[in-house]
Image (cartoon, rainbow, N blue to C red; front, side):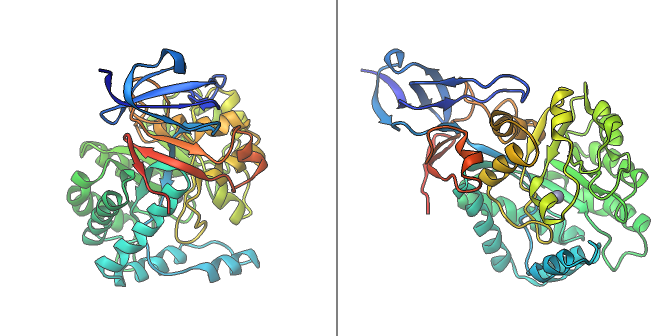
Length: 398
Ligand SMILES: [Zn+2]
């Protein structure tokens, strides 16, 4: 009579991932993992594995922790491909685009919008993402932002993917608000109390032409009073000091950082704030690359995420983001994979449960159609999962 659970094993590389991107990669070959009650109960060599009735051999496939996409905006309707084309033809990025999406999103009924979110979460899962942070920010009223948070919860349950929900009421100023300051008042007095029980984080688009550092500080302080963690869209369009604000207020992550300079890197070094880098929109916007190498060399915890959204980047595939991290951002493949697993988990406050393969962690695992992690660079964007487990439950691949 063996122990309960299932042993997964293989003759290939099990990439354990690392709690910190600066640590050297650790792999195990051959390997075995005991999965029990949704968690990893044991990791080691196959000939030392506990005796169970169920045993599955994954052959020579590379196996990694489930990927963590720590920054997405999946709740929107409408199509802004025309705007992307116009921008690439020379027109500047402007706040008007978000309001265009807001109008289309408000006009979509619940079923339509839920189906759009389900399709996006399914495409994330099909790319090996097992945990995803999902932001609101295209409703921009208490009722619409609350609806977005509810639809994310419903869609995630449908798809069987872990989600962390983030309230991004301060994404843009809606047309009915008198001014940005008036809208910040509305977010603090009406929206935060209405949404706080449905979200884990509050995010603010703190940048030139959006919300100022002073407005962001008011919002983040209020969000903290409601028990929410805080995040910032920082230094994407200009160097504003949003990074230093995030560090000072204990933000879980500051995201984008295309315009971060040496002083900003120094501010992040030694803090617990994660730098979340988003190479997808950087390329589509033809923007500066964020200083990934300098951040890693300074010992900052780095996450890689898609930033899939309505207007600047629309792809929920994390394998492409890992490939871009290892190519255009100058990271090693191991650093990029760590940033897409353990780093992503740190960026959404889930380091204790997902992002590494270790006893006690959630059994979120992906077997790939590759035998070495170098494939994420070599086959840029084309590496695919062959099998996926979320909390020990295998998910069907469509
Ligand atoms: Zn974003």
